[in-house]
Amino acid sequence: MATQKASPSPSSDLASLNGVSWFSVWRRRLYWLISALSGTLETEREIVELRTEKERLRSEKKRIENETEQIKRDNERLAELESKIDGLFLKYNIGLEIPRKPEKP
Image (cartoon, rainbow, N blue to C red; front, side, top):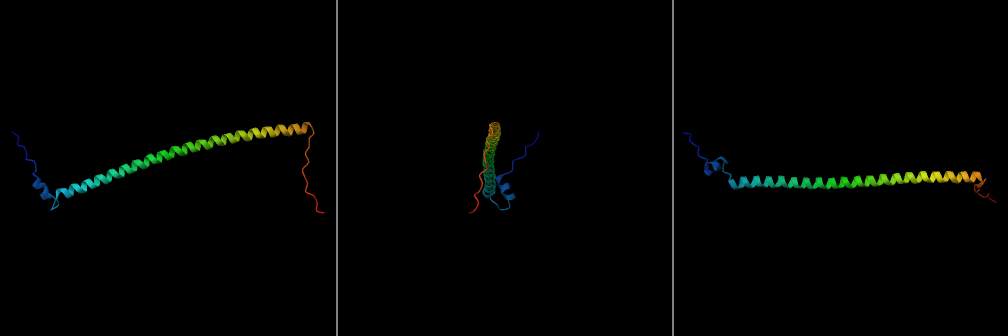
């Protein structure tokens, strides 16, 4: 029959800590764990903020691109209308003189 090894007694664990109580060891471990989790939560919050900012910038970029396209269409339309006006002026021989500066008396 196989013999079972006895589990180490709490006193033997304490002896291996070289005079450090189990409470202070676990306290340090818990402090480290809480610090690690706190850092993780902070990092996750920053990631969410960066994603939100990225989406805001994407929508702003899209809005600017749409406005730019609208301005291009407006400019093309204005150029077309100016061309028609110039054509009508030539057709009906309408010439507007450029105003001249009066000469000094």
